[in-house]
Image (cartoon, rainbow, N blue to C red; front, side, top):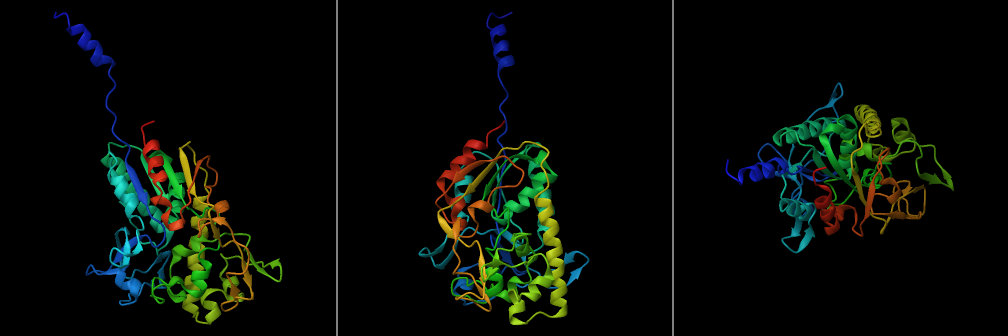
Length: 363
């Protein structure tokens, strides 16, 4: 036997096999994916829509077959990276910087784009199937998920149902406790650049997903110093207190039936988000307390728009869309990273990419 052979065999025996890198998946929040029609034309979002030069109808059909909403022909084709009103000058980078940084990591990286308008139970099923596919592509590896905003609610529900798929999770700006962040948009509409029609109250009304962003229980809506007994998951309360389209008296019987289905599905989705997780998965929370954030609303206040004042009551620390107090995942131990960024820019904080890099190692 060669004198060096035993030494070589010992080295080979003791050497650890090279481990495969942890796959990374990014799931976006509401409004975070491109929507295209059957001809490949962008309906959401390009500079032309933001300038109001072109206007696609984003309203979903209000007809349901059982518990599945009718489709409108638009589909999610990718995560929104950037939107410029004036090319390379005036616009928003959205998820572009994070995606660019993730592409540089020496790891498999995937993005999950979904139709953010539709029922989140439907989106949950699609996301779970996607995670299983990613895991199988990577020799049944566990997956690290970075989840922003509403995508974090979907991820929290998926984590409860299939914890074996997860290596770790980074939640950023997730409204776990719900809140009122989207009530002004549903009541008065949300201008997008110069386009005041693309996300009008009539449009928002048709999106089942937006109803999952509210809190059940305390309404946080006040009148004359008293909190009103409004349950935002009760369609009768929307009508009684003239919220959203009801303030315009535009709701037909078929639309009212649609609202009841949205709230039913939203409440069920919220239940899935709060289910216990059977395994200890490393969880990290990225949030902000740097920006005053809507916390309560005054009915018939001094700056009311059709009966509701979204400006006069004191705001609380948050990221401008989600309160700090609402951003912690229920039932999970987590480590926290505070950012100075606003809600839409949380993932573009360099510290977040450092966190993903450091925590995305094999355990």
